[in-house]
Image (cartoon, rainbow, N blue to C red; front, side, top):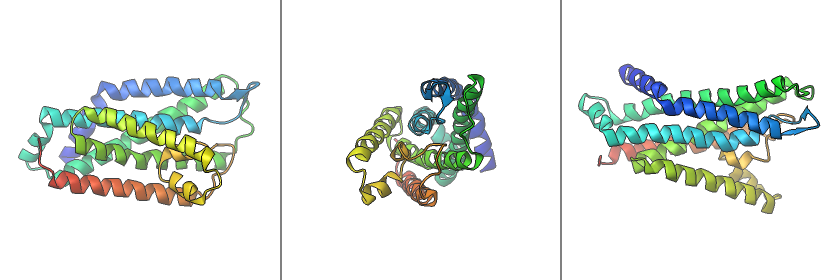
Length: 240
């Protein structure tokens, strides 16, 4: 397992797509910070931007790397030399957890750095509330990563990138339209806690999140289900 994990980490962190994604995230964070201001007073680190952008970028890097393993025969080689399918999938999970944390850090770091360099007034921010919101964003995008992993395991080729984008975009549209139409619905509020786009209008570093423990519980449950489905499918499915 250690050799497999080391090889996967080395390959993924040498991929150009990872660094293109980091550069694009930095530019988008700068753009959201610039747009999210009122009379040079920084009103909020744009968490809505993080909850929309990060799932797309993390999913894209994940899909490009895993689809390449399927189409190049790398997975068959791993199986031939004795790695189990469970270890292969767990290795991917660890690698893309690291990618998730890295992308999150790049986006948020670029956002705060941009606000500081633009001399925005950050006096309204409170460290405890900021930390609580940022941790909640990290949990949401981390658990959503397992949805992309499941898509890649099922589709097995580069089409997974398109399918992942369609699903992430669909969740964004559902949450955007649903939050307006079902503003007072407790059932909708619960459903929206399971995926990052469902919290677009709920998170801001200026205000403490509502029942963050419930959002964490829902998000982790969704991520666990996706991981289990990926394991079950990958272990039973014949390679093309």
